[in-house]
Length: 388
Image 1 (tube, rainbow, N blue to C red):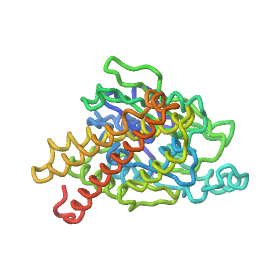
Image 2: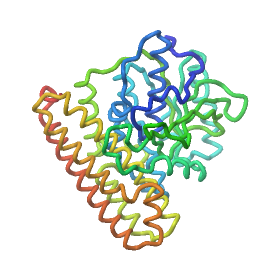
Image 3: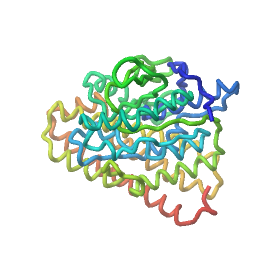
């Protein structure tokens, strides 16, 4: 069955609404696909808050550590697609995984891996493009120092981040490269598409802009998903909430696919604390820790906004749970906000007392995670008939 999408998606800044931030490029690309499918089907798309999609993907609750990755800022690149297939189904997108990440783990730059990709997976991608089916590709954590510097600036939390979304921390992008492959190319692997970057500008509401950047793949991606069909729908609020809560629980409890050897939830914060203790204060170390903190803060703010809205929509018996979770998200964000982004890096550089306070902040963030996990485990134990 052919997709409802055209061969080339006209994604641009205009396709990304400025109603609130997201914390990952995958969220924004999926949102753009959803909006384009609505438009091409001649539909007037229902409102889709990016925080809703973000929560369904589990991003606000994805505190991720990768013991095998030495650069802690790159941890934020992992695990973004943990629930992509399920969330796609929830929003009317049939998403199929075609390249298991374990096929690439530790071999990303090996010549043998490139040969294997071109023989086994490239034909599948080309066949998908022939049927107007775009492909989402993860090429791994971002290596470009200049782009990482721009991302750090874009995700610096604002003092008013707890206010309504227009006063939030802007559209943020984790240090990762997700590409929407929508056409062939004459260079590299023969595949091209778009990725997202901050524009460096904000609108009148203070929301950081995003723009699409054309890109041709020069090396095989680590993960691939084909969007086989697009029949966009907006899930019922109760269905969306149940999915978001279950994905949050699974992430915090480490009950999800860990093929990349990642740690999540309280275990991730334990690993982060150990890395912090192993480093002496310095400008490079301050930048990478502050970069990761900024991504975590932005995700927690997104989750807080989502949960606060759900409090007004959910049945009365469920509101205490949602209020507790929203409060824990706020506690986590507030604990790390002073150490996030460029301002946080400046505070941490060559300042041992600030590192001590950062360690204390990580302990507070861990307590907030445990509070969320305890509440969600109790919710889960009630059984599916009593959930939202």
